[in-house]
Length: 69
Image (cartoon, rainbow, N blue to C red; front, top):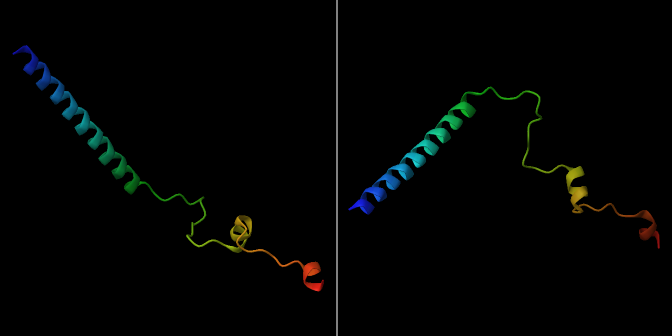
């Protein structure tokens, strides 16, 4: 009989821990929604600019010496 009581205590502790984690997550989301946007950051874009593409090696400038040969 003692074992079943310990199991129920452990179960309650697990449930309490999950509930606290969910409450913390809800609180963090609420803070993020209510926080004013940061003005210092530049607006982000999903489209890469020419410099980024050149850095990745997608766009390669043709060399004029190779074209003349």
